[in-house]
Length: 525
Image (cartoon, rainbow, N blue to C red; front, side):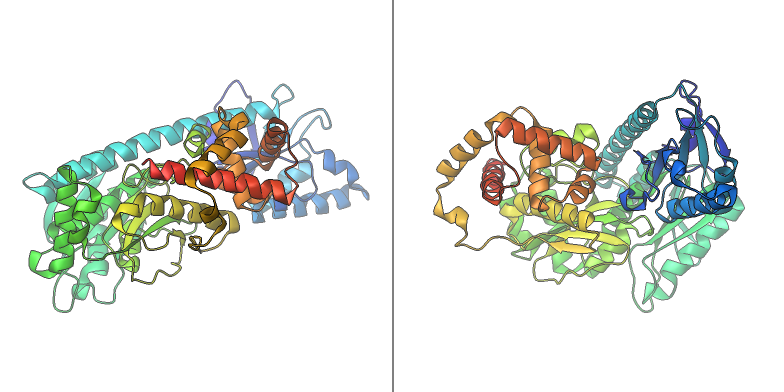
């Protein structure tokens, strides 16, 4: 939620009194009265405090100034987006030394009036984020369908450009390195933007694109330019580039452009250069679109086994879908709208802004740089700069839905552990699950977990908490909720199940039951 929108809420009465006035994005709200809240911040928060910790400072005004300077510096270093200071019950005004410190360190400082509870601020942010998230997911879903439909039309390249300009809300063009235009759509930009677009096309397409970047960006006042190398990359051959001019504050536009870049790479590529593997991929796609089952098109794909990769872009990178596709060595990549969840109740978490599960091919991962890719199983997958990856074990086509869930689980673990890549490890053929029949395991699981059957969020929380060895912070990160919410849910689960979740035997039995339900769900998809 943009801070300016939060400040515009008249019912809250918030007022910025220090720090930069440039708009910042608020991802969530955290309240803390600790002198050092840094260990409890993830970045992007509005940190709320009533200043109770200031009472511990002794030594007069100089000591208070020094303390507040360090407090502001630590808060900025932790990645907080803004600081909210509550008036009453401790302080009648915001300390002048705090305002000065926030000005020095570039931290927006917001005064929260006495009549506004911190929970009202938190509720306003979560409501706005949820609504924006829903609009963004709807837009991405509609754009993905429109681009796919455009690619099937008689003049697919022109149709994709039109769909991209409409859903990306900007100008799109196919440019050669010398600036020659091979098609465009949308309102034509000013000369400065057009010239910059030509320079980007030269960057990604000059000298056939050999050894050069697969994507590049440039920023002009009010415009973000992105260029993606498409076809013909090689010595002595000019490479076309897709160039998109869009609003710099519209991340979905660039996610949509990444989808279009992959489609246009397939559409504009000469059939002779694509080879039998790419031709087989296209044939498989056509068969699937007209109703064939995955197992029926598997022989056309060339590789007997495929690895599913779920990827989420890190905040510090602007890497594109096309660049990740190149790094992974596959054109079979698409944005995803919901992260593939695992375990019972994963889908219910979607209503709380957490990641939810979908079958392979039915959706996608969260916006903001999340992708799903299919990579031939014999290809080594390594960590990619700027991306967090969850990788499944190689699987045949008919088992890709399960591999998709495994990759999603691995991605959640990677995000929670702040690891660049996590691989799913399938249990061996002689694991404990092989000692019990599937029917017996299913009946036992449903009986054991019956008190949670009507509460998918509790099931999802238990599944994630156990998978992360009872770590509160990692579970909160994985689910996108506050760790206190995790604690409350786990306490509620222990009460409903009438058991001690600190007992290792209990945890093992619950995990076995949850995994049994996972396998049962997979078997019916």
